[in-house]
Amino acid sequence: MNIIEAIQERRSVRTYNGAPLSRTASSELFKAINNAYDPFEGDISIKLNDFDLSDGFRPSTYGVIKGAMTYFLVAGTDSRQSELSIGFVFEQIVLKAWQLGLGTCWIGGTFKGSDFDRLADTWTEGQQLRIVSPVGVPSGLSFREKIMRAAVGSDRRKPFEKLFFDTDFATPLSPNSRYGTALEMLRLAPSSTNSQPWRALVIGETVHFYYMPKSKFAIIDCGIGLCHFYETEKFYSHAGIFAADTTAPTPPDNMKYLISYRPE
Ligand SMILES: Cc1cc2nc3c(=O)[nH]c(=O)nc-3n(C[C@H](O)[C@H](O)[C@H](O)COP(=O)(O)O)c2cc1C
Image (cartoon, rainbow, N blue to C red; front, side, top):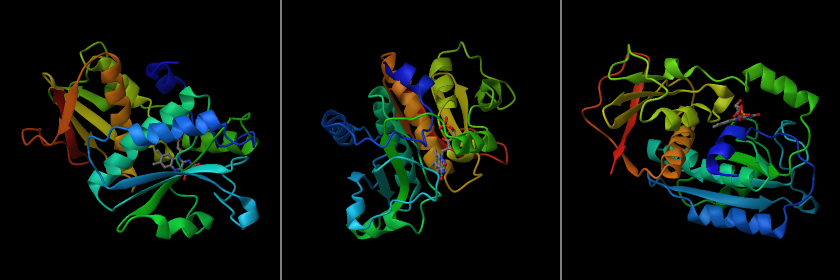
């Protein structure tokens, strides 16, 4: 399965078959953690942890996740740079897991105060646990999971023309334009409560990214979207860089500027 197919097919998995990861799968995931690319150079760490229940550990997500004993733990410092990195880097692992036939689910809210916090002293100074994600072989959708997906509209995404603009914020971008495919893949990215905070304005060869500051996960969400964008560019043999651009147009009141992308 190539990366485009992985982006298109991935969904959050909250019900697992209870089987441990194979040795090959674990080793591929560790490799993915070590080889992940981080253009934002944030201060983050990712761990892959088997929870041994005989140790008295209860990796509780308050009933959101069933049948998984292996979790990724993602920590970072409290900065915009680290939040972008958490999204960008961990989504590479999520997509790799999907290519290996494994499900994951970004969890930002429903683990606080549970046994995951017992590992808090293992992070480097200034880092805090921000995200956990189970990883394992998906089992069928549970009733509870169906309700949860329906509640946040997980199967829906905002239309392309409402998110991406051409030259000014009044002109929708054509999906057939130079960045159409990479932005379409960004559009499919997962986000907290499916809020899809990302917006983009294309001017010539440059893409200026903006976001709606609706939730405390908005920047992490944007990092995830930028990962899909970048992986698609790479798949089609385009190389580009992310950098702040002082010429980026001022956005409408409800949006904030994030970063820009241009060919190298
Ligand atoms: C940063 C972030 C935090 C999330 N936190 C939670 C969470 O606490 N609990 C949960 O069940 N799902 C959580 N999700 C999963 C989203 O609800 C899900 O990605 C979204 O509804 C889209 O569905 P999909 O991933 O199946 O495409 C989170 C996703 C992201 C990106």
